[in-house]
Length: 138
Image (tube, rainbow, N blue to C red; front, side):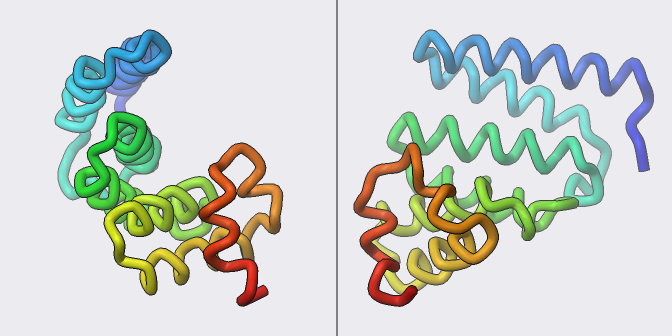
């Protein structure tokens, strides 16, 4: 299923505004833009590819902002959208969110899945602590 062109353009515009706000560290304002975009997507939201990247942007922004509970929730939403379960970025950052929340067994599971999808490269720009969590399992 594809979104109508006008709706798709409005969603893209809101997400672009959100991305620009993230670049200047205005995370709460960025989250508001992403949520506005998400609210434009018809139900069930998990049926739409656009939801995958909006939930991912929300999860990533919440993580950067230190809100790991919301980050985890948004990444769980993202993996339930088209392509989400096979996306190493989503899987990795879900694992990192779980790690930060102290759910280490679940964190290992998702960090390992990310490694299996992408190899060590998925950890290139990440804090080494996440790779070290699974290093002895490889």
